Length: 407
Ligand SMILES: [Zn+2]
Ligand SMILES: [Zn+2]
Image (cartoon, rainbow, N blue to C red; front, side):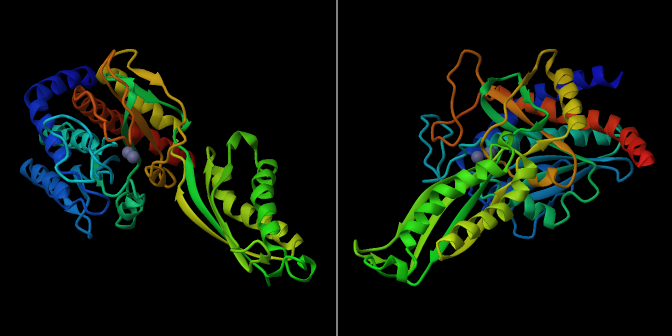
């Protein structure tokens, strides 16, 4: 049975390459590059893939790349890693700390990149031995933190022809050797809302002759979140929270405009899609009641990552096969955003949380200058990603042909 042999093949591959992969990760860690500026990182990945006989295709901006392994026949499975760093200071006291002031791999994307590189090298060996029953598309995605890199990849055909996609993210609250998984939404949506209210303005002695703009704005600030909570399913946890309000300059003058800005967070995909129109209609009705004009600027962040059940099953089966029984642990939906969500709006797939905490070790947090991982997570990640791709290739063909035959 291929499943059992695969584990032995991965053992042999990692015995040879694990140290090299750790060195690769440390090199990336020392040279972090921000969103859409990952030129060096992209070149490093491309060099290694080319040396393994693969043909990477760098995206037009020069950051991020796509590379196929295996033949065009049979199903195509995509594996995605994000490659960008964060604009914050590295505070770690380690030999491989960032050499770039104000830039740090504090979200573990150096680890994701290294895991996908290791997986690529292993799959290239499998393909050369005639053991890859289809094609694997490797996506080294730029600019996850912006976010927007996923859309850049998709705009250049990154997932066209792909049957399923898988990705993972470091989770410092899960022990190394374990993988957190969840059916359905695993991250949340987060958007920005900015509104501008305008009216004639005037003296505070005569609010009835103008529009009492500050009063109207105050009504909008309280009424909008309240009305919203009564118009959507409470289980979607759609919440609007203001962070900035500006209006007026004198105690006795009604201003002629004012602004309010906030964020909209949401656990549910349907509620997220409906949110802008709903907020706009509520805003217009509250503003209209007080005779002021209101305009809204709604900036989409990312939708929630919604894991597909069949893909979760494949990933779960693969993780247990690769890391042993009991390696998969349940995880909660986080309120954070992740642009992997854009791929899952188009094709099925699953996103997992890879444990990076040393057992009984310190629990780090991501997006902190102190963030670091137990580097054993790299080989664990390679095992999970490679086994997932192969499991999906073994299973996706018949499954999809059955589905399309039924459709
Ligand atoms: Zn991040
Ligand atoms: Zn991240």
